[in-house]
Picture 1 (spheres, chains in turn brown, purple):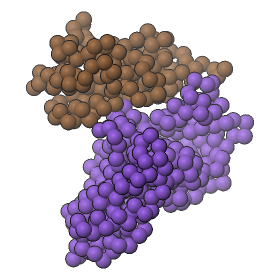
Picture 2 (tube, rainbow over the protein chains, first blue to last red; picture 1 turned 120 degrees about the vertical axis):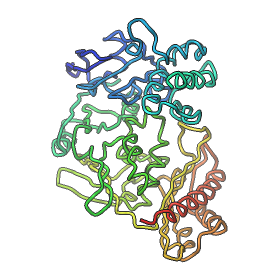
Picture 3 (cartoon, chains in turn purple, blue; picture 1 turned 60 degrees about the vertical axis):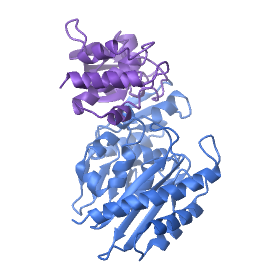
Picture 4 (tube, one colour; picture 1 turned 30 degrees about the horizontal axis):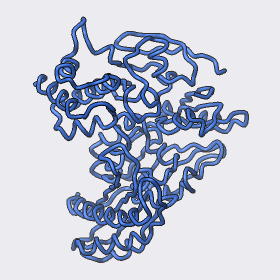
Length: 157
Length: 292
């Protein structure tokens, strides 16, 4: 078995150190070693977006990132977006708009939306749908999700 | 996931040394969006994964001294479409990198990887081919260059020999009154693999007639194909809808697609005609606007 490597990364604003095998995905390490279970394992081959986290500010599917690649990187997961026990406005909009059913896809949607609104605070509906195309939801339609993102963007005005 | 070692060299020479090591079965990791899936599903085997993202020249994205573009093999799609100069001078490349997978994939996937992966349906390869881009390759016996159009040798196959690494893709300058476009057809709105695709490039003369044209089709043969008969029909002509329809019909003849769950032979040929016509119209429009 390949030797474990010691990796240091800034995760949700905190410097964290972990040991991992080269073959382990960032998703595995986040969930199994760091107990950050917000990112979900959906398809495990990059199609569904349920494991989306931000890697140096960019949304990525953490199932297609090796944990060893995260050395020195800044990683944000859904656990890091609420502050002081208060949901972020974006999370509140998903909640109030009932933009979820089973909730497995929600952390991924939240992280992609966070990145979207940081770059483009007032996206059009088409832009929202285009940028969230990499996040799949298998139980509800996308309309409520799109409305929640629009509500979050409205609130930020 | 199968077991492997990991190395992240910071120089091309070191990467080549690792890739050529006879004691290892090494694979290159750039964006990882293809290779990690293949390794996980055991469709590829490796004892060593060589991450090339820390090598400076593979991360370079800059205009060359000649006015062309140097695109390092490890530059992700999202970095490419955020560059206004590239959108202006190499618009067909921007068209393609914006639609490869979703945003999460674009944050990681590279054009270099898309080329090396050599899928017939790869979105970035037709644009590289219409610009006459060149692949810069480093290997145990030095460097070599070859036209991107000759880089893929079959479905999932490329010309790289053991120990060789794609360093960059180098684009020649685009002249004034030139324009290009890339389009694909997919059954969904986003996040799918091309059923057929086309990239068109045109140069107009002072009177607005077509002086040069290049048309490359994707997903309708084991590698991309040039629609040379369609190109010839355009030379010296004034752009018109009728001309683009004729070029589309001739482009269909260059396609030799397969039937699969995404589309039949007839459907794919038909799409070649439609996409050729549409990309030509956009390319001409962009060429007319490109007066600098």
